[in-house]
Length: 148
Image (cartoon, rainbow, N blue to C red; front, side):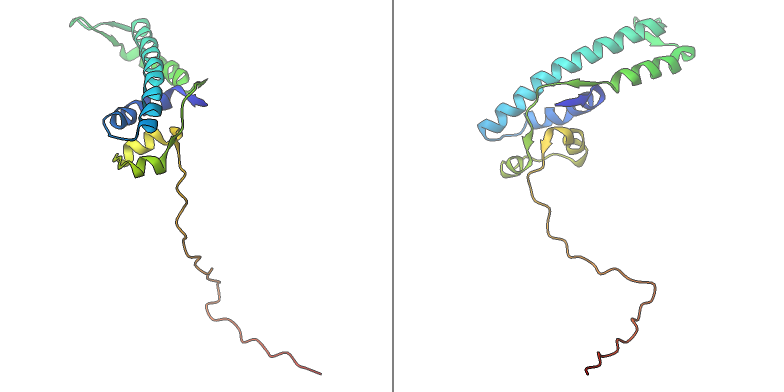
């Protein structure tokens, strides 16, 4: 599947939550495989971020390096472009219905972070169609057809 690096970084917390949930063996397997692959990508993303901090930063006197104010714009631009890149990664789509059957509970925020990795196989509920209201709320009377 193609996915942006920023999406992978955001999905980490959602997958960590899933890892703490009890679920059937097949679902556990898929989640654990995804977590391993995402963790590897996330490590590479963090290495790149640290390189950029070194490139655009200076020592802060506390043993760390901070991006300088004059370099923050170029740092943010370069990092944003990097995070916007799409990569091909072999991940399993996680079945939403299987998660529901297993009683997995996650927050809407975590669900949003996992959206690209979840197969929404739960049918949408039947929503009644509301008639469209015209500009004239009272329809004109219809004349009966004349028969000859």
